[in-house]
Amino acid sequence: MLARSQPPVWFEAGSWDHPLGTDNLGRDLASRSLYGIRTSFGIASLGLIFSAVLGIALGVIAGLGGPWVDRAIMTVVDVFITLPNLLLLLCGIALLGSEIWVLIVMIGLVRWEAYARLVRGQVLTIREQGYVEASRALGGGMVRVALRHVLPNLASPLVVILTLSFPGVLLMEAGLSFLGVGVQPPTASLGRMIGDGRDYLVNAWWIAGMPSIVIVMITLLFQLIGDSLRDRIDVRADG
Amino acid sequence: MNALVELRNVSVTFRSPWFAPAPEVHAVNDVTLTLRRGERLGLVGESGSGKSTLGRTLLRLIQPTTGRVRVGGQDPFQLRGADLLAFRRRVQVVFQDNAASLDPRMTVGEAIREGLDIHRIGTPAQRRARVEEMLDRVGLDPAYAQRYPHTLSGGQRQRVNIARALALDPQILVADEPVSALDVSIQAQILELLDRLHADLHLTLLFISHDLAVIRELCDRVAVMYQGRVVETGPTEQVFAAPTDDYTQLLLASVPEPAPLAAPLVRAATA
Ligand SMILES: Nc1ncnc2c1ncn2[C@@H]1O[C@H](COP(=O)(O)OP(=O)(O)OP(=O)(O)O)[C@@H](O)[C@H]1O
Ligand SMILES: [Mg+2]
Image (cartoon, rainbow over all chains, first blue to last red):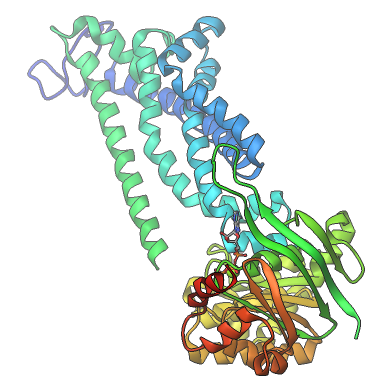
């Protein structure tokens, strides 16, 4: 016998069988949240990796490729920045369907331009450093400069930026799933769970509330990790 | 004495980007200069006179707008592939900014080995041995190979830069103000090192500086640059004793004062 809409354990009607309560269909919110984390993390990380690879590659090429290549890439970046992200996402999903790989690619496509911009700026600075000119005088080509000098010097700021932007990507997936265009039932994702609980907010707020708390905590966690990474890197830059 | 490096009517003009209405900069203007095998040529001039630009042209890092460059009879700007790599081995450089010249993410050993890696010279063991040999040559303990540049002093870093340049066994070394960023006592040590390396390795040296005293100490010949032109060349002692050019005379007369003070005077005198 399923207990429908049972509240979390710390309420009178709650029980240890379902520590975070159950939803309107009697499914355990704790285990569904764990599945949701897995789905959401998977989509967010793959989307982030996709956008980072795209953005870093294009940023490095723009920074090292000379004025024309730079202008061409940065024009595309500017166009992408002016497009509203949500519109882009919804168009992509409307055209390609709401499969998981579509979500990953579309999330990647709305994020890459920020990384491309950041990386290009850093590359333009690194390119002017004496060690790059010395490397060219030694006979090093652009590929060597990119791989041996530019990327290693970009690594630490990038790790910080990627960590700090992970929650944003997670929220993007959650937002789409909440709207019902992201992950499709019965697969659990945090956004989907919030969306499902929307109709029961008055009588059973925890159905939407528990996954929301999970999202807030994950966001906070990544923010803290990112900040401490940043502090550590700054210290190294001083030493 | 035969000319190893020949610059003939070399000009470098920096074009401003199309959207900026700033005028063109004639960084180097119709310079003719030769470097003989084994000599130490001092290039002196105030800030902005085009010394570094001329050095970079010789290094094939900046293409001259007009004029021709010959190094050992070849035009470096015509070289491609293996010939270009051979040219890179032949002409090396040490810059003024000893810290910026070293990648903060590379150990001293990796930096010195970079040229060997690029040119695929020797086995890994041979490269390691070469790094130690170079460290020894510039007066640093082999243990420094494991250290990162920021743990070294400015003088030590400049020694590493010299070691990296010389690891490829070049014939010509362009030293662009190699001691200008260092304390006076360290300056003397680095100059002494360059002097010794010049003798031991039969280097041809283009030594760029705005410091007349330094040039006088180290160089056989001197070329004076002013506003992109070479206004006087000659054996060091001759130029110092009896300068023929107005600007050189002002430069020598103003030795205790910074050289740039002379610029407005000359402009007034020639106007
Ligand atoms: N990449 C560049 N783009 C535009 N202008 C440049 C560039 N490099 C140098 N210049 C200009 O060319 C002129 C000569 O510069 P250069 O660096 O050769 O002088 P310098 O004699 O080496 O001076 P310093 O003693 O300050 O090093 C300067 O007016 C400088 O502003
Ligand atoms: Mg200079």
